[in-house]
Image 1 (cartoon, rainbow over the protein chains, first blue to last red):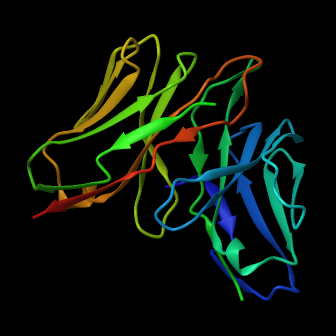
Image 2 (image 1 turned 60 degrees about the vertical axis):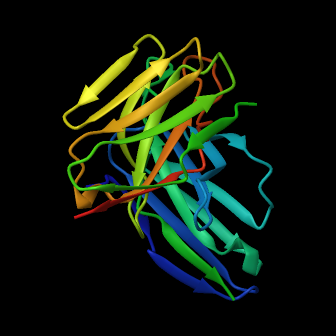
Length: 116
Length: 116
């Protein structure tokens, strides 16, 4: 069973709505990630947080706003999205040991987003 | 940046047969190669990984081989079962202190179907 929990599993929103995706892990991992996955494609990296600080933003539009309130939680705030933003949004986490990342990414089940 | 090619894109085998999926990578600095299994409607699940200081790794019916010189790595599944049916993604990355965090470069995926 995955130990990365994402809510909600499904979300339908209009282009003017504001919503948030949430991710939680209790494995003590200090790196957390947001990925976007379109149908029949591999996951694409969006953001990386390391020790609760944003370390990578893959030139994601500002209508996606990540937040890492503490070491166990990761949010993705959504505002003024476009229909082409409909996708599966995956959260992942990985361990950091004595300053070194171990490499293993553990993914959640994802939040399937539909923008009308 | 890194470029990962994965073949084949679809693979059908009879239950009990073996399945092999192959990937090549372009960046000789890549040192971590995970394989993910993604079932329909679920997030990717790490099934096995290999680091560049190892040539082969085995876990029950699953094995991965790495040829650093040729820059290719393969996933081998023996005695396939219908529950092995899923999309399999290979990935390559550089991990370690000071490395680029979370940059998993994925292959395009292989849809494996195991017929009973």
